[in-house]
Image 1: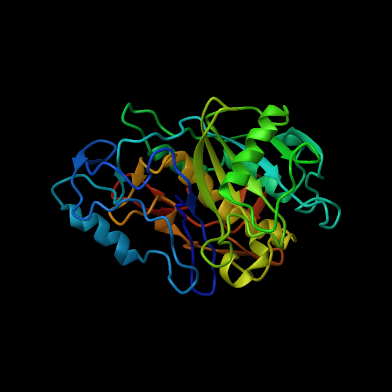
Image 2 (image 1 turned 45 degrees about the vertical axis):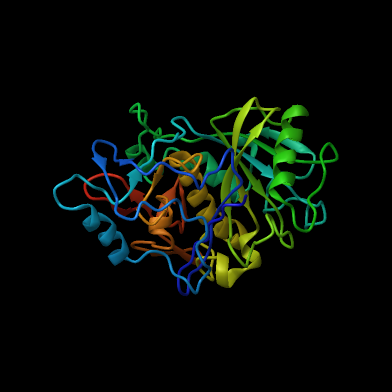
Length: 342
């Protein structure tokens, strides 16, 4: 069963999604405790796994205000609810650059890993690698610290970029339209080949080059999605994110026509990458945090930038490390909730 999510904004658009399940990710408990108080939400919707592209905009401020108001002023409420499932308290990420070897220079992104290479995240010289190496220490990522599980564990104010891997001949190259089963087999192949480590707190982000319809609905249903599966190679439930080449669909999957860092493709990718990583951390199996309509934290702020400023050949709204990026806001789960950048 597929579970997918799409992001969009008029004039500035993109998408995200979720796919595959352990049992049935649509079967969620209806009791909805917040971080500190039990609440009953009148809609009690399961997670919405598709958001339409561009023509169906992200949630408006009024939608989010209604999420808060529907619970009632008598109870503490931040507009998003906990459904009892797991978060990832100490999240890490592995980047898998699944190319065909035919893209210019072999790497999917400028300066990125060429096919047949792997190493520590610090050795990823692409702009995507720079973003991943610095995201976890940013005030933006710290928003996820406002999310807890039923035992009081919080998503850490850190995100470790542990490893990168650009598959070579040891595993199959992507087809023109890889399925979730193909992505899962790729992760398991990398683990068995010793190219990446098995770690159940890691989100394996799979990037593909232009021309690859990753998951089968890229550019028509979504721009990215996160999912999970039970892996014998990893010995448990693996979380992953499908990260197609957003620059292939600039009108639907890219937030701007310019590029703050002079790398249009990578600047386009980091926005949906942040979206999927924060959702995977706070709603790892689709049973943790989402609102009364089923939107996860990043969905509630999809394509909402806040204050922007000119940077390089484009616009940005935050500094990660020493570079400027345009990345959507995220939902802060305190004090009534809201979309913030820190």
